[in-house]
Structure formats: C-alpha cells, structure tokens
Length: 284
Image: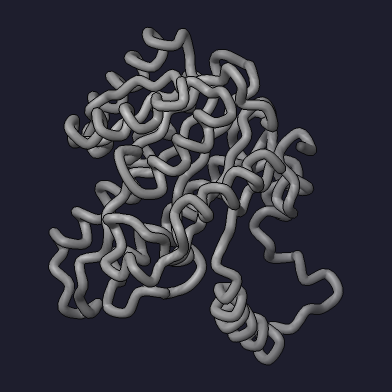
C-alpha cells in the first residue's frame, strides 16, 4: 500500500511517542486517522496538534487488554470514517526489571497482557473485518529490537513478549489472504515515554519517517538502529555454528522437516511447501 490519501488508519497508543509520530506521518499523507489510548486528556492534546495542518483525526479511549474495548474501537472507526484500511498495533508497556528466576509471575503476565495479548486483540478484531471486506488492507504490529535478541538486561518478561510478537506476526503473515499486508515494526531505543533513557534515543520523528518509507515499500521487517545487525549476527552465528558442528546438512536432510512432511502428507491443506520458504500462500 503506497498511497494513503483518503485511507482510514487506526493507531493504538497514539497519544504520545512513536504512535503519535506515525499518526503525524499518515495525516501528512492525507489519511483519516483514529488515535486510541487510555488517557483522554493526552488524546485531546494529540488530536489538537495533529489537526493544526488540517488533518482529519478522531480520538477513542481504549485499553487494548480488554477485548470489548477493542471491539468498541473498531465499531467507532467504522462508524466515524466508514471503514478502516490500516491498523497500527502500537500500544505497549516497558519491562518490569527482574532476573528470570526472581520474576513475579504477575509482573510477567501484566507485560504479556499488553504487549502480546493486547496486540492479539487488535489483530483478531480488525483482522476478521479485513478478511471479510476483501479490499486492500494492512496490519502493522510494533515490536522491538527485542524481537531478535535480548537488548534489555533483567527484562526477560518484556523480551519474551516481543519474541512472542515476532512469532505471532510471522504466523499472521502466512495465514491472511493476499489483500492484507502484514508488517512488524522493530524500533530500538526511541525517544518516548516508554523508554527511561529518552535523551539517548533516536529522534521520534526521524524514526517515524524511516518507518513510513518501509511501509510504503511493502516491507515485512521494518527496521532501524543499524548496530542491531551486530547483535542479530551474534545470535544467528551461534545457532548456525551449533548446526554445523552437530547437525550438518546432508542430501535428503528434509526427511524430518515438519513442513516438508506436512506438505507431502497433506497435514496443512492450503499451505504448499513454497509458502514456508519465504513466500506467502498464493505466491505473494
């Protein structure tokens, strides 16, 4: 999706930070935007700033951990703008610092409730409507560099939530019909209320500008923070080294590959083997 003029966009967690900066990007491109967050006063401030240049913006109070509120958000967006074309699941919370063995289950669950299950609510509610409408749509989940490696020491609950979001978004990409684009936005440290080290983070507007370039290019992994490649290689190189030493490739080594076997035996109807090797179902 390259042209957003007249498109209807919903962004959660959009009163401040990355969500607000992305809203500004869409407004500048002529989109109609619903910004959602839990604090009405901050939403009103954000809407006032976004409409200074004539943007069409509506606000909705929403706690994404409550499925009924996400359903109400969808109802509001459809009734206000006649539909939705793009969903940005941006709302999230930061880590509750703790070592893995000392973490309180309730603290881990509270992070998962927002960063994973809250996003899942948005994907489910809006995704079902997107599938039914059969017109070009897009869903973007805001993950983190923590989708790929542990960037936050003693923040395993947060890192788990972002690793899980990568898994869920990757599965979503395979499952949706071709008219729905899916992407995973992976910020590193960006100036926002979520990050304690805001003075050291990437400029929020600069990050949002980079994100929009990749959204317009139809990318799945939407990235920033170039040094992350070093951290990613550290993990992947270790994994590849382990396979090279203890499970090296050989002729016919797909004999135990679950997806190869699934295609051969018809375990996953509708998902041909090529779909599991970088292509989406249908070859898109």
